[in-house]
Image (cartoon, rainbow, N blue to C red; front, top):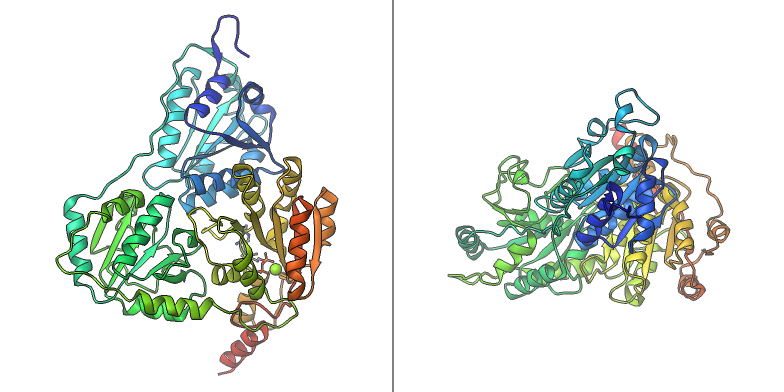
Length: 559
Ligand SMILES: Cc1ncc(C[n+]2csc(CCOP(=O)(O)OP(=O)(O)O)c2C)c(N)n1
Ligand SMILES: [Mg+2]
């Protein structure tokens, strides 16, 4: 509440800054360290989501940052709250997502005594954030919050952590608000675009690889038009499948874990690789084997919004410091001396052959067939979320993403992301269908956020791939230490009953053909729902079984 002197408390100034910077949603687990902020929420029109664990709150904020390109915001308490939230901060780092996290801090006059739950946030978070700071002076709240939003969103986006000492938050100050932060575009220069046109016109078999952040629907559309005009094959990197409408005739496939071998062949035999937006990190580079380091033999064009990423691993033949949004705008004006002609048709045919039909699988539920059913039956703007585990391989392979922001999943490979991301998406887009895919291991890392879904009446459907194990690790185990199962088996709760215990809907599916009816019931319930798929543990990837991996490994070890 504003005082009689008409001065604002620092906490009110802070919440006012959030509104000015366009924030609509904040996610938090409350703490006594930032009561004054909670009080300021009381008078604001911000949509506040109270969560069950700070890791979930940080992931929800990260998911908002991922799909809007503007910093997602969360508030957590001191030591234990902040360290819980580290999970989401690391995702924002690796996924290049703008996020601003506020953390309670002990009062300024008790600092450095290791006061109750005190933590040195700069020391703890600096290796994961773009900036970690503490606000000592209430009068500087507008300045520091403004810098945090600019830092998080511009260049290579990423997380910022701001500690807010509790005594600072209740100080009353006379201070002016900052203006709204700006999303700053970095545009390619005319020389760079001319060189790009020359390289493309001279290439026999160019290929485009899309990744990273700082995209938008318009940027994706511009890229798609350009690719179609010149028949350029376009693939997307791990968990960035939403950057290209996969039903369009230039789509060449997913360059993530276990990609189509034909796609890898195509990249290896191409004579110009154009990477737009992504870092070409460990997964898309197939563990740094696809291209030589530092100078790839195949000419490489690398377009990235962060100057420090250009030349970090790959010394590109043409490095362009630009946001994907600005680069795709520049593509529209490109002039060619010779018209490039790519191999999109053949690449798309390879993609269709790889993804059209589900593969044969052991067990009565074929997850590939479930994904194909969802591909044919979900609305074009449905949002799909997931965490990490082998189950996601079927999502990547068999679904067809159509729109920007439709796929919300961690490129960092972090488990536990799907449920919080689905909560955030349903908060942001109440009228869109939201589906969360989870492994049985993955789900229970943040499954408690189903309580948040119930509290805010967010009816999304979680599909749990229940194979009774940490399947991914078991797969690696069988390959490296065949037959020696260690710490990968799981005894699971009754997942449908878990959903019902929270007030949701739950159902088990034991045969593929029962899935559509179960999905219909889950939808009709109007509640947050869990559909548990009973999966044969042998069905370890769309391409192979555990027994085959073990047998191959044993044979190799004998030789
Ligand atoms: C937070 C986190 N902890 C651990 C891991 C390592 N890890 C990767 S996949 C995986 C198992 C996933 O199991 P599940 O969710 O059941 O999926 P499945 O592989 O069985 O389909 C583990 C433990 C990780 N990626 N993230
Ligand atoms: Mg599992």
